View 1 (cartoon, rainbow, N blue to C red):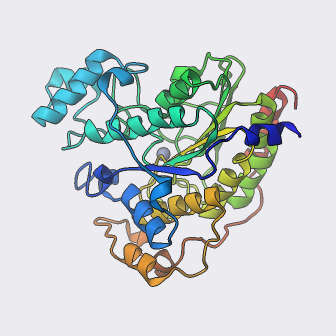
View 2: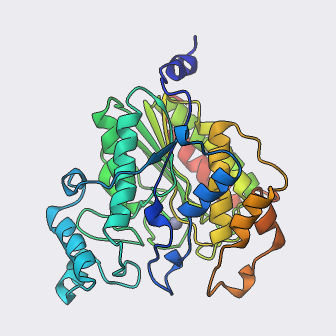
Length: 384
Ligand SMILES: [Zn+2]
């Protein structure tokens, strides 16, 4: 058997597991916040409407205990976050120190319980993957969270907690791949100097948080590729085959964590990238069989239709379900029931958002910045 076959045979759980929860349904960061839209509940509803989420593959996410969060977060921050949820207000001092009660990270009714549930899913995933397997937790992927403060819509950093949990449960070498439109500053902060954690990120150049320079090297295992506005599927295919796959394969990871943020698609209001969801699904599929443990997380994604369709398709890819060209009535009903108050004018709902999961591919000439960026990073791949 080759290495990949040996790795895969270590998987004892034959079916991928979906970690979700009802707390995400109806939870909102407030009427003007990009995270006013439903996301995880749409994925659960669509997957069930398509017959893809039987009880045997669904796990209700536990809420993480405070003590379990101190692997990355400070006790003072966790106490402030819980106090803010209880009081539904914060002092100026707490706002200044911990970044709570800001436009990005507002006070809202589930501001501790919701992220603690996503973090609980990530911590549990590391345990469940002890002997190998595939887990999907679309509520995870909050990659901006910092030890002592909220940041960029993220209150806790569940990807960091997931990697720590994987390591406690037998995975020494972890490859973290992040295809969200934004750089995972919190994850890089945590692991930049850890040679056992490979960090690969594609993110829109010159966009918040403006970290993630191509020159970052960490302990030699940090690969940041800022990508230009207009990034399309052919660009991403080149990045996948010339950078992501060679780097991950050469690293020989015991586990792969993919942050699959949905904000790099054309229909998303928070980036100028132009991927179709086919690009994300290609990455999900290509990374699936490289390591014995595979955890796929969500992340950004602010158009309720594009994020719901993309992330449901991720679950299909993980399970080898064929994605139908036209959705059955029950699934279109889920999509037609969504609302997006305050949608940008350029993003008024389109008919195929209601009737399909798969976007039309978005192809084009490879951007020079993509080609040159990959060429700059590729020599740093050890053993490639
Ligand atoms: Zn993002």
